[in-house]
Amino acid sequence: MGWFGEAVDSIKSIQIRQALSQVVSLGLIVTSALIIWKGLMLMTGSESPVVVVLSESMEPGFARGDILFLHMSKDPIRAGEIVVYNVDGRPIPIVHRVIKVHGQRDTGEDYVLTKGDNNHEDDIELYAPGQRWLQQHHIMGRAAGFLPYVGWVTIIMTEKPIIKYIVIGALGLLVITSKD
Image 1 (cartoon, rainbow, N blue to C red):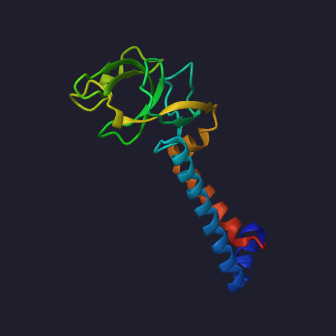
Image 2: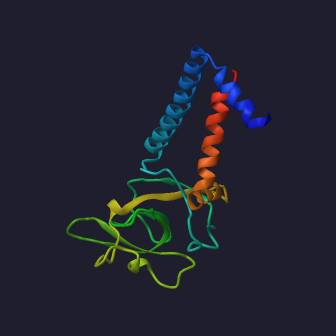
Image 3: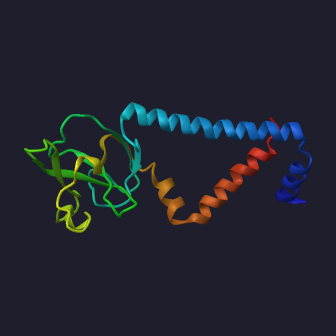
């Protein structure tokens, strides 16, 4: 009959109580993940405490696929720091180094200019049209640490959605057919 036939028979034999138990378990797993994410957001002060480096623009410091852990503090941003920023009109955050900080005397706000370590030019071309500096509200966080290459899982699932659906389907099937 094969593996698939056995899985179908296993699904047919599930009792209502067991099915409800498995749905509750799945709900607890999802809820736990959300609580952990929200806890990380509160602890780090960043709306996105973990990001994946998506390009080679920060090599040799960070490679594509590295995971960065972010934090946000009230301290002024200094040249040399690595920040993650999001520009209006661009859905994907960018990881680059601050190369210049410009303080505005009348508002007291700092404006920053960034550049990828592996890029020849600064990031003005990446900013919104007419924008020459990043403001504080563009900065999502500052790099506090990294884990090399672990983000490749995210990159592969984003670039090849079929793999994501296969993994989600397999995990769902595993949850449905487990007897515990």
